[in-house]
Length: 440
Image (cartoon, rainbow, N blue to C red; front, side, top):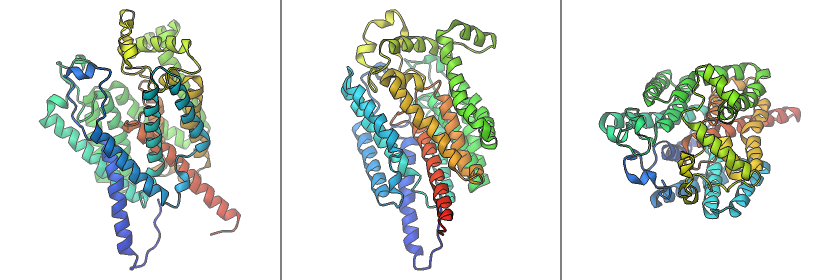
């Protein structure tokens, strides 16, 4: 995201190019943050039907159209070799996902899911090439985030029936009174507000303190009203952990690898190992993590039956075979929308090999890329944004299913952090190589 000096003759062409990039960037941003179908009604019986998908033909057409434009832009960009990198990891990863899906009981669900995941990964690998500068990036983030926040507040004020959880909702009437804005659930709204807060802090540092501060205040106020306890606690915690991660290099592996392992051990372990559950209970922590423990115990049992191949990508939760299997007599978890743990879900769907390949991409390679970034760049507002998004999503993945969710805003933003690290590392490597060879 660097700009070069331009002559007066070049300025009109550069302005038109910047405008086109802005339109492309904002179109995909708003597609993820607002969608074509905001303010979903949760009181209808369709929310209980496992065969009722959230996508529609218009959504698919717009998604494919935007993806095509993003790909076309990427193919003509000087850094087009960055598309779908690192291929040595991603090609085996998606090939394995496809393989286990073909062997599963729901091959078409898996194949469609893999195709969508690949498309979204391609989009993410190109997306950060669109801004012409860091300031341009900050301006677009500010405008897009403000648009999403204003729409959510509009819903709460003028469309409360579809912006605030109601007691008449069929799936979770206990959430009545909690804000969700134009998002489908309070938890997704809470996660969005955390990311919006990170965006606001970045905007404050890179462009406008006023607009950035406004974004932070609006996002935090909305977050409090979502009732999302986990996200509300993780926002300040992530800021503190990210600060330590940035400042102390020797803590980076313990924070990222050790932190994720410990969090999952305590959370998921509490569901299947009694001493862990008792330990958390003694600390005053809900050892069931809002009834997730039942889901995790059920998922562990399913993984034990098929640990290598799994059940196919998108081939387990909410499939008709599972929901109508009669297993609800033993546990309500058969009707769960997902496993509420990204690491557990990937293992459940794609087996232990799928989990290992995923961890290499989302956890270990970023640590390598971060280490390759120039020391002075590691303390920049841009890297700080990536640190916060990456760490928050990694830890939040222990309580929510996020990985490879094609239309999920948080997953897409997480991938942007992965590619942000990679681009920053590549820039540093090119500069070092240029100096070593005497280039300019």
